[in-house]
Structure formats: C-alpha cells, structure tokens
Length: 350
Ligand SMILES: Cc1cc2nc3c(=O)[nH]c(=O)nc-3n(C[C@H](O)[C@H](O)[C@H](O)COP(=O)(O)O)c2cc1C
Image: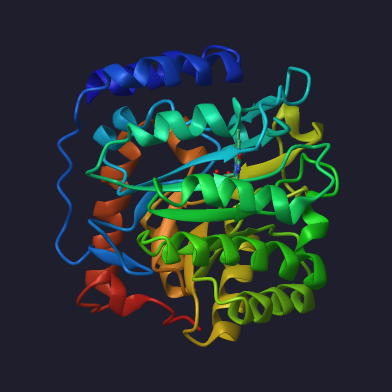
C-alpha cells in the first residue's frame, strides 16, 4: 500500500498523459490490495451484485488493457472505454491537464482508443471476479450514430456485464446533441434492439445505462429520464465532465478547453443526479459520478439517488488508497445517521 502511494506521488511529477500511460503499463504488476469492506456496503446495480458501491469511471482504461490490475486494487466495478467502432488517435497533445489546487482535471482527449476489435479481444480475456462495464461511443466522422452504437452493443453484450451508451463527452463535436429526445430515442432503440437480438440468440440479459452531461438544463434532463424509461433501458450515469468553469478555480490550467472533472463537479453533478432520480420515481437505477473524493461525497450521491458510485479524478490524485478511505468514511456517515446499510440511504435526500 505504501509502495502504491509512493508510485502515485511519483507519477504526479510527470506530465499528466505520460503518467497515465505509465500507470496503465504498470497496472498488470499491481499487488492485490487488502480491502476491508465495512459491513452494510454491499449493493446491487440493476441486478448485478457489487461488494461495495465504489467503481472506476470510464476513460481511465479506454482499451480494456488493465482490467486485472484495476480489479486487484479493490474497485467493485470497472467501466472500460469509451471505445469507438474504429481506432481513433484523438486530439493533438497536450490534451490532459491537472488542476491540483482545485483537485480537478481538464481533458480534451477526444476518444483516443484502439477500436472495437482490440477492445473486444482484451475484454474476452477479462477477470471474472469483478463487474465490468463497456462504455461505447462513436468515431468523430460517424454519419449513422444509431448503427454505430448498435455495432458496439452487438459486439460487447456477450462479454461485458453491462453496457454504457456515452452521448455526453464534450470532446467529440456534435456528440452531446444526441441527448436531444428524437436523436436519443433512435440511439437507445438501436441499442435495445441489439440487446433483444442478443437475448433471442440465448445470450444473458445485460443492463444498459446512458451516460449524460452535467450541463443539461432541467427540462432537457427530465426529458432524458422519460426517454430512458420509454426505451426500457436500465439506468442513467450522472455525470460526465462539464464544459462549465465554476467560479473560484485557481489552478494555472483552468483556461484550457475540454471537460472539467473532480471536486468542482461534485455540486452540479449531484444536483442533476437528484433531479433525475426524483423524476424517475424508482423506474431507473442511477450511478453517481462527478467529484467524489470523500465518504461524505459518496454519501451525498447515495442520498441523491445513486445505488452505485464511480470516480476517476480522486484516484489520480490519491492513488488506490482512496478506495479504502472512502468506504470507511462512508460507513461512518451511514452509522452516524442511523442507516443500517448503504441501500437504506439511497434517495433519502430527495
Ligand atoms: C482524462 C479523462 C478521460 C475521460 N474519458 C472518458 C471516456 O472516455 N468516456 C466517458 O464516458 N467518460 C470519460 N471521462 C469522464 C469520467 O468517466 C467521469 O465521468 C468524470 O471524470 C467525473 O468523475 P470524477 O470527478 O470522479 O473524475 C474521462 C475523465 C477524465 C478525467
């Protein structure tokens, strides 16, 4: 554990993307963390059993290249991707910026990834002792988004535990327009049709999630909830990074273009989560992501309606020890307020 903490500190001295690439290459050699999950933290995500609510958000392991190592660190679930049908270089570097004083990151990676074939080959050799989601997107020059999402779904439903439809990354021009109702319904129908074909062929049923941007206005957010229920997907992940720049950012890189993640995203993404979860009235599962860096943050997301949580930026700053610390602090919050377990707290702030 001390060794991994030291490794995380050393990586932070390198340029952000170099450090990330080194971490991905080193992860196959990561030792198993001795995680002590406090009682009462086991949870369920649309029928999937999780040892605790804390998972790794999409974008860290875009190519499903480090799943075994990440599982050994103690995440209960890992979302690999975003993968696009064809390989893609992404935006010119530099495209990843740390904002240490704000405990934040700005990225404009632009879906750099090795494509669906490479992703599927790696995912087929996945570890079995952890829940793994596959997050699918589209190439930047895609002319038929529903067909492209369906291709990703068809390929990955047999090998992932759940699927995430990502229509919310800010770094692919036009992608977030797919959150508009008509376009969204076409995408979701294409993906659920792929799921029906997969099930009719004898495949195991898999939950499908939609990942949304935190920059939606309230009316658009409620429309998305309605569209998700109508399309009979299983849940919504709230949220991706923000193109907003909340007042008070102090780090030198705060003016960089791209999506902002980490601490400044906690309040807006949790507000949106609560709004959408209230409107869903129990008909959808919610994954809360955006700015989680402490047990209190995790607790706030549960109370806003999430059964499962993900993080990315706090893992970059704190290393793998962040998992045990957040679980301990979350258990303390639950005990303090008299909740018998994590599930009992879900949605209680709404
Ligand atoms: C460098 C970087 C790359 C990301 N790439 C993706 C991605 O490919 N697909 C996606 O759905 N989200 C991506 N995200 C967003 C995260 O999954 C997450 O939604 C966001 O960072 C908020 O969580 P956090 O505040 O804990 O970091 C990325 C985030 C970062 C920092």
